[in-house]
Length: 236
Ligand SMILES: [Zn+2]
Ligand SMILES: [Zn+2]
Image 1 (cartoon, rainbow, N blue to C red):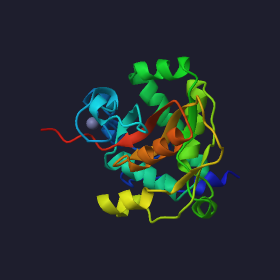
Image 2: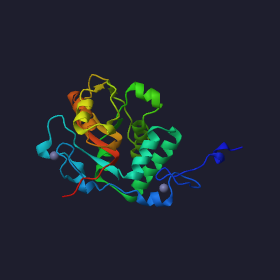
Image 3: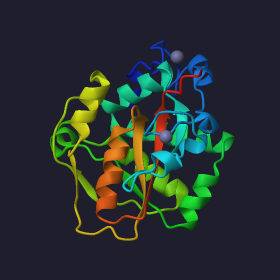
Image 4: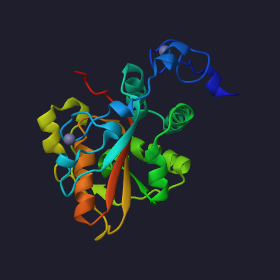
């Protein structure tokens, strides 16, 4: 007997019962792609096409720029929160679906650039205690799927040294403080490496900025990021 037929299915976006899948048709329609042309620089938070770091913001240990797939709207937010605290198997399926859906409807010159320049995909690490408690790191799951899609290798050059409170509950300045010095490189040199950092939610970008600093101190060449979702830049 297939026990899964006994489990009631519900939409991860709104909680309404559905026959199969993860989201009701209403919630699928509400998913929206992030407009990378209306992106932002992660150092001044001001407009920047393709989220490139402005020349005048580009310090020696800075990120080059990045790509975001979806707007962090209520539907995506609920999917990500659900995946953080639930089953890996379901998480993999829905991440794969979100990646395919984006690829069918979007493109970016950055993807070809990363492929031609031998980038390695680096998930944002979780502290080992939190990884143990949760059983998996959702950034790692995402990075694995993206590595397959981009045909680029997955690496693990960093570890988290401090356990901090969940980032979404902290204020901007608390978040900044929490992230400083909380990552370490696991190898003495990253000379010549091109890294693509992967995470599920981009908020202030402090995690990406900190990892870029750690990587470039070990002589990494370029550090870019790819996030599944981010809040769109406020206009005006
Ligand atoms: Zn729904
Ligand atoms: Zn800037």
